[in-house]
Amino acid sequence: MSTERLTTESPATEPGGAGAPPPGPRSYPWAPGSATGVGSMPGTDPEQACAVIMGELPDFPFLPELPGRGAGADMIGRTAALLVDLPVETTPGGWKLATRAGRDQRRAASFLAFDLDAAQQAADGYAGPYKISVCGPLTLAAGIELSRSLNPALADPGALADLTSSLAEGLAQHVRGLRERIPGATIVVQLDEPSLPAVLAGHVPTASALNMVRALDETAARAALGPVLQATTAAAVVHCCAPDYPFLLVRDAGADGVSFDLATVGRGNLDALAEVADAGLGLLVGALPTDAPAGTKPRPPRDTADAVVTMWRRMTLDPRRLAEQVVVTPACGLAGLSPQLARTALAHCREAARIAPELIEEAG
Image: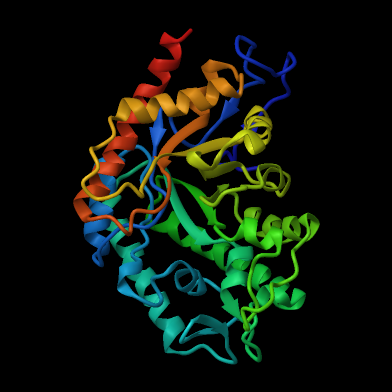
């Protein structure tokens, strides 16, 4: 296994609660006390977005998504640019499978190429973790229509299998290309799966919107996630900012980490999150809300850090592991914010990540 994956040795003692020794030497791609972003940024200029990210998150930058540019720069369209031998095209409602590649998919590929050029320029000489995001296979299948039907590809097991295979191959090529562009980067892959809870609950609507696609069972969901998570030697995390994050399913599918909105974690899934954390998965904690009404007084970074520490202590985990295992992020993407607020949010997360280990030490 590549050193970019999260690695662990067999524990000498039973892992457990606060005060217990860590469950063995672990290696995370990021440095202790790190922060990063989720993916999307405001605006339409990739060079400016990459420069802001490198300036505010010099220890864990990410490749920005700029959906403000329109179709092809959206989450599904951007990932469509990576699909191998599986053409898609736009429709009035989004994207659908097609018989041949057309200008829509070429436009998406052009957007991605511009982004990669900007990232290469901004990260010249950089060495360290660098995160990229792609739409996960289940959300992709829920958002792309079948070629001969308005129903989502999720409704057809064969189409879901084709999407999964094509995405895994395209992601592998994408990671290889980025490593060539930024040789010092340790790539971290993020699969965006905002529709994952809906897929599992049977809440993805059919074309008529009168019915729902049959719920996908956990075995089938793991079978779709697994090949994409394992498509590269890079550490892979699954991001979902919707409620009811299926932490244990994502762990069992082979993810190295989970990325989530802290506000959605309650009594119902805190135990599952604790089990995932105890297993050593990285936690990318969306601790800074991104939906505050305009004019709301800015939240101090210490409050965000305190929210992370409170989460960790509620899980009764060894406080010494927080700094290494947790990465602080905004709760979701920043495309809906102004450029200045987006920059401030990234800086806020970086400061909160610095403070959190100090707070947990102070608390004993």
